[in-house]
Length: 429
Ligand code: 2PG
Ligand code: MG
Image (cartoon, rainbow, N blue to C red; front, side):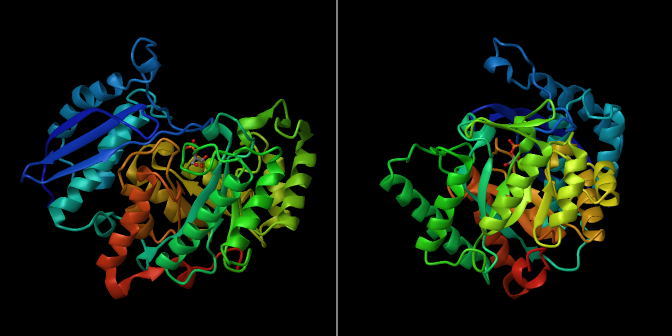
């Protein structure tokens, strides 16, 4: 028997871009409480659940979330106090039913998710467990995820300075989480030194990666490869390159517009360009190589590359079970990015992760570009044994909060801690 919900509070706090977002506090009858903060994306997919913003230009430039907060206090709270929910599943089903829309646009996915996550947190506190131990996830083992860490941040996260969004690394040769952090630290520092030497150091993008002052998209691969080498590491063997193309952001009228390269490419040409990058650089993973509307390119690319690299659908699947099911059936990718706020409840997120694992896919749990100090996703990654976590760079506290939380979880697990590299078969192995 779990404690009943006694009260819910919700109020405005601010994310890593300084934009308003929701913090929710849930109080249970016996005095336990839980807290959650909601993140926010910039390069959002067309099919994501709706983030409710007030759109009143006089309040935080239209970004305030007062209506979503009122929905929590005035619509959701009374229903949850009336109905005794006994599990995360029951709570989330009730929230979905109460909203009643396909994309959670009545109450707002941000309002619903804040309540859903705060409930998970309050139940962990009631049980006296860490969140990763308390989340109702199916798993064989607690697995510390392999991090995917950004070195350069482009696309919508650096005002379109460069077309491609994320230039990241995956430390596929690391034997422990700390070894992975040390490799990342070295590559990040070396990348900074190269930029300084070449007079290209211009600050940080939204997720903490270096702001990309480059003359072509491909130039970044060369600098990143150089940074890995200068860190004393072998590209491909110890540290590989991982990309989020976020191609929807520059797809228009069936063409890919690479502004920096001054090129407009057909799907076929763009696919060939990606293929040439995969041949020339130590790339082990690629996310959103095509727009979510360019399905045939996904299918062809996956049939050509899926036994060599990880191909992740983010905007394509938006953490939606039905969209994932279609993707598995049609072999559109071999991995899915998982973002709680794309779908809007903890239970739907857990179900999507489980579906992916059952299909032999590797889910990658992900932060948003607008983040908070909330570390829910670190727990989610460990609890589900998903195997990978993408948080942004190795800088800025909203990012480091997640990396540091993994270290705390590792200590708590002690000799039960298993690092993904040793336990999970990845497509690049
Ligand atoms: C993505 C995310 C995180 P955003 O595209 O994967 O990098 O960006 O939160 O802006 O959608
Ligand atoms: Mg993405």
